[in-house]
Length: 384
Ligand SMILES: *Cc1c(COP(=O)(O)O)cnc(C)c1O
Image (cartoon, rainbow, N blue to C red; front, top):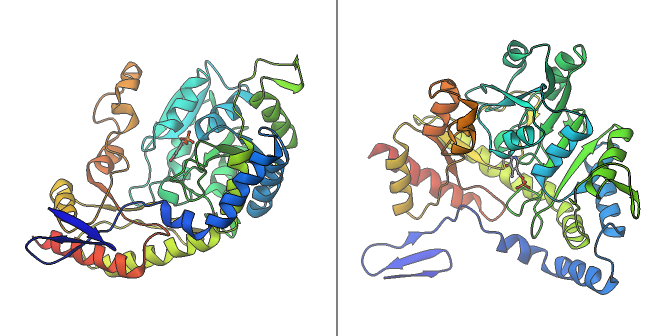
């Protein structure tokens, strides 16, 4: 029997155990409750719920924040990626280079347009695909390189752009975990040919439901995407192409505008926790994430690698520390991709990551004191 009193669980016998939730979206809501409630009410009272002023304002504000020319709101992150590939005319016979280690959405966007997935192994500590590995995987059929800023650590988009530009290959980056991350002082979202965003509730910038966007400096791509997201129509009941219904609604846009004003502050809190983890775990046997000089992570996730993961996880749970695994099964081992015929052992870097990776709690809901408690609990579990 136990009950939670302000973050502590008191058991009938034994000392109180602190509870460190992996994620808690309520504190962020409470921090902005008045502004968020007002935003929702404002839209409800306006009588205009799709493709209106809130979306236009969010698109303008988000592209200004990133330092890019255009932002097109869509229904979710998966659509953001597949719509860009469609707008570029990528399809059967074309190859798209993706990381072997990513959330499955990246792969699904490529197969959704009928193109062939060419997985590339990530660097084992940045978790990003890097220039040399990408170059080695390129063929005459390569149309797009699709790097993922996994865990918030940005891939080196400027060097990848250099490689691709000279070969007529386009770069679309999956920034679903990288809101606010930067390379060389430029924010992710302003560097590639196009960037896909998800505002799924748990992301660094999260809506109260599904939402996504594409940012780009290419005006003609932005226009194509505006048409595609709305039934292939620019003018009501006039359909230029076979589009889809994938719109970022007014309530979500209004919520995102409020939360955007807090993104940097929330990312600073994440970064302080990450620095604390990095400093205090440096002497332990866990493998820490590496953020190369010039890159700034959004610290969506703080991933460590441990050999005896299940034992460590259980011990952390006993001490009240929630952890998650991002991700337990790589895309090529998913049932959804058995028809690709990729044999087990084909991507050893990725397979090792999936066996060892462990995400420690991080987020604006946690304090440095919480992170210190996590480090103590982890150090103790490693000693046992
Ligand atoms: C969340 C996520 C997506 C998918 O976003 P949705 O909005 O859920 O479609 C894609 N890629 C990565 C890396 C993600 O973390």
